[in-house]
Length: 257
Image (cartoon, rainbow, N blue to C red; front, side, top):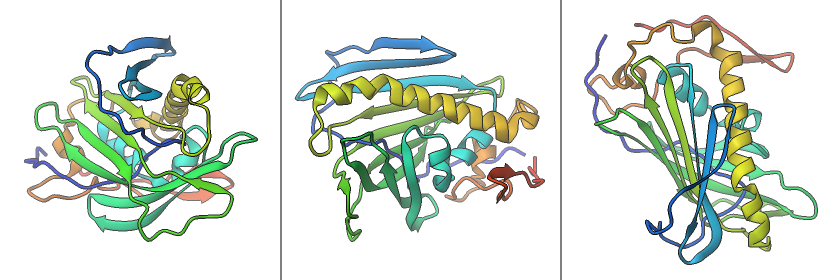
């Protein structure tokens, strides 16, 4: 059933292992394609005022936006697909569309792990019907943990756009700094591998979770998936999942379509 949508604002939570540098996007620095492999493209570009490169990755998955967003919003499952994520957990549910999430990145020796609390603002592009998550730090009232470097800044955006054939376009953009003492040149080495491996794992988990429902309903719309029937609500969960034997156990769900 078609539902009337309204723009929503709020948050979920997302990030990477480093922090955003205080620089503004520079239109004079065009995106440069760094990797085009397995249906995943990763771009990078310079940003004025920062030695750290900004990156953007994109891919198209064979699942409706409903399923993609459902998985994305399960914060505690981020270690299953976000490359080098060691821990993720909900800190505070601010509103139906806004929350704070703790995220820890497991860095390689000799660098200490990075962590932080992030707020993600969720909105709907009324033209393209894309679901957007804008992420920024919100470490207030959250104690630092021993042996981890607290990240104070971050500039991240995730965008999910439904396509006419039922597939979903996934885009991930981020600009980051070192977060403590990490040479900028070393950080820049990860501007390709981190988003590429994250996308590959995320797509593989979608295949594991939803392959039997892939493109079953190509006419699905962003209004349907968001459940925006005149209310500003979060994306509804289509069913619960329990953990058994270290693997996801599927439970039958009702789509209501």
